Image (cartoon, rainbow, N blue to C red; front, side, top):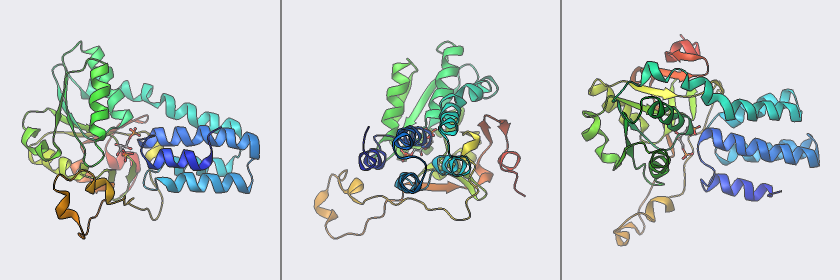
Length: 277
Ligand code: RUB
């Protein structure tokens, strides 16, 4: 069994990436951990540190809340099963969103969004294509490109700064979510700029996110990552000495910029799914 420290490192280093994958990985770890150590203090400490390794995404937090109420392997199994299969429920709605010949822009790497698009591609027999933004500084967009390529989906990689330039060409934007909060969609930093560009160009902006991403936490943290992630990418490193660098990992897109959320509960407006006033 991989140690807690190693598991946390894998999550922090983005070897395990995307809100659902992080939760599934952590749950699988906790399943093994509980078999060895039970569900007592050691378990609580391990779940706390796993949860805090990527504090913004809410899925793992919600899973651990459920586990605190019902400390059992069967609850862990149910949660894993839900997260591993939730896409089957979401893809049922893909025909209502993605039509033949649709050109879709996406951002970062969201397992839920990627599976939704690939499913449509298979159904519409090669008639859809994707524009994937690189997603600076960690380039998760390349992971999206790779997934698309593996499924033969025509895909073009663009620089993040080019999103508005290409917005005229696309039919819609589809992204995933780390958390669905009253104040907006929490997703990879830069998502809000893309949503605002989509609204300006009158293009629908869809979010694919399962109901475990509904975030009722009173307070939440936007994870701020190491400046090194940005410095490493600079070509003119000589100018980087002694400068202040900020590297937030997520931002909040106000709901007015989101057309619909597609989840296991159906195609909903943010208000319908989150039930806020
Ligand atoms: C990933 C990201 C993804 C969401 C949803 O950020 O913002 O859009 O986590 O992913 P990071 P999924 O690369 O920093 O983890 O649909 O796979 O849950």
